[in-house]
Image 1 (spheres, one colour):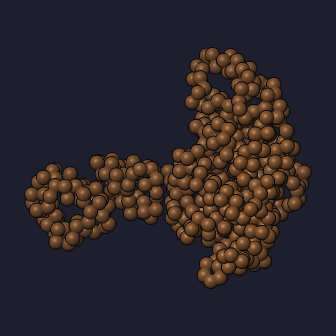
Image 2: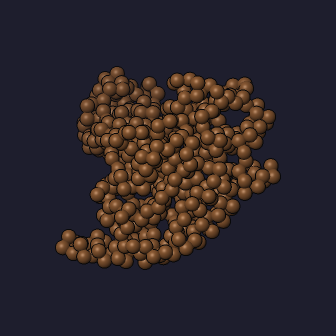
Image 3: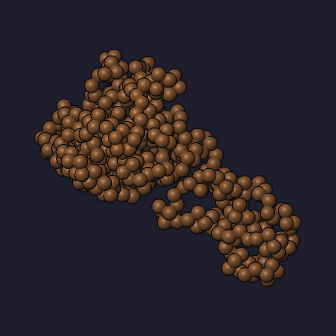
Length: 486
């Protein structure tokens, strides 16, 4: 209400051409207090509102109602929404009032701008949870996706129990901790037997005793992650939480952040930072690409490709100097023509496929999609092992090159669907790349740049010291929007 009042007060004052001093003199209120009202920081008592209405020559009911002029509707819609209450402005060093003050400098123009954003949001089916999840990604990017306090919490928990970092705790061990120490009841039968719940990995039900429903069709490693995350909620003292996995509804940023913290703790508990770091160092020291060796590293931690790859995005930027890295997850139903981008996390400055539009499509040369096609043609069973592929990709418009590693596996909760994950890092970023050549010389310069690309990769700290061809058949180019095309 205070935002709507501030909006109307400034709009009425400007419409009548009255400066703050004039309104202050007629209403008996101070200029500073009026300024606080217009900024949405104060909401005066009824007596002062009556004085304000008289000073502006408007009816009292008109001033205090929530109705605004049509050109201010978008501003009201934004500042009255739940998004404004839940968005974590403090993470970025600002408050909602600061944003409101900027918008109300010229409410009519701000209304037109916000109307444009709202229309774009409707066009792409953007909801409040998209903004909250985007805020989380920005928070991760601010910290290069590495959080020392969460790493140390997981390491301390492991040390206190005498667990070796060489072997992740088993599902049965994690189950025993939740049941004996936290009084949980664990149920693996309800979800897969219920038609409307069988797609969920887990459902938490509070109370005494707390109950955790786990989908019995999950792989042991997936069940282990669910339990490790549950332990994370307890160890970190996180009370506001998601009740389901997958999410049904995002209710607040605190819920989103707590889910991230508990999941981060789970990954760090299952994959010891120092041990995995040493395994990765040895893997990156190989002279040639060896997909089987990477799969072996992953199996050592009994992890799914998604959990393993996401853990890499936490450690590689921090300990291997490759801060420009991105992660994506795709899913594909059997015989379907489309692919769903179900998760994306981009630490690089180069645009990558983002999946905003419902009809967005992706080039089939993208390695994660190639693996999905291959798995479907081979008719892989639900219990099949993951497959891996590597590819060098060149983004012409950005002048950036990536080394891309993808893995794919059948989905545990579906008999006719597969999933793939992609992690990539450029040996040189778009920021350090030379400007794009002019059209008259682009073909020659582009050819020369591709010829030099092998040397660039050889110097990368991630890639192996292996001479690669200037442009292998698996490469692709992208449009300016970051959508792969050929």
